[in-house]
Image (cartoon, rainbow, N blue to C red):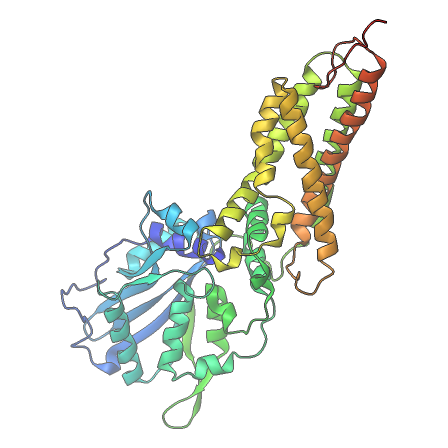
Length: 441
């Protein structure tokens, strides 16, 4: 899910059908006439951008033939923007393909977007460079270019990682079998936290697979992590010598933007404060309804429910659908659905109906809030079990006080509203309750 953003960037920044930078050819293998000694392979890392689809950066590979004066940029981040894109992504069936484009024009577009460009020339033997070049030219052929995208396991960065490892005969992967310095979730958060809403939604939707122990090899789903590990890698060449993987490195363009945080921020105190404030507002509005005349307090109460259902219920509804209807394994059995789910989304239409004075909608919202409060309390108990190991700190900090205080607000309306009605026989019904007059003796 997170790596989707890094791959989307290239779809905007790179032409769908690029040509060679300095020389065109219609051969299926443009490097068929190249001398191995003239071939150069470069890993290009593009820094993060301003939009959600490029928060995570991107990378590509450049093949250059100095003898023929030609170069091509290959990337695995191509996909089609269209009406079928979002449904396919939601179902976990999003198809990407390998594209090629001109180097200079692609660099110019990234510079225009104020995105850093860093280049690492790979220190490979001539024969391995030629083999890698031909593998890339074969990958872009129509019959080979498509692949089924996965956010963490099969994306534009892991494809290049695997190519480099293949060129080294598996030595690259073998060096990266020590534990990663952080989890998938932590890596995702440190890139997404510049946008609090995206940060929260990604955290909310992802299950405990994001906490599973991973290796340094797995961290290379991120372009900058691949760049970092390539820079420090060594391997044994055909002569038995241990040599660095990078022959040279340079920066084409350094963007003027804040660097990606080394660790994710701890936002739960702020979310707890926000959730408490939103929940307390509901409880205070309920007290207002019990004491004030007129319809404005009720309308305000209904508007709060509608907002609650939209902001927290919509992610809950989508999270539920991504569990039961899609192939996104990272969204299955999501513990956060105990906090917000399709029931929460029902508060959107019920809140609108409450604002227009519907007693039935008020009762329906009351029962839903009671159920959500009970599910929230149940989650705290279930978290004592070893199998409930998903990191839910941020959603729990925000949603727990909202669910509990909304339930308390409805309890106050039910308790005091009905009590006041019982004392005032024959009075106008309050909050949807019905006052009955005793028959005269």
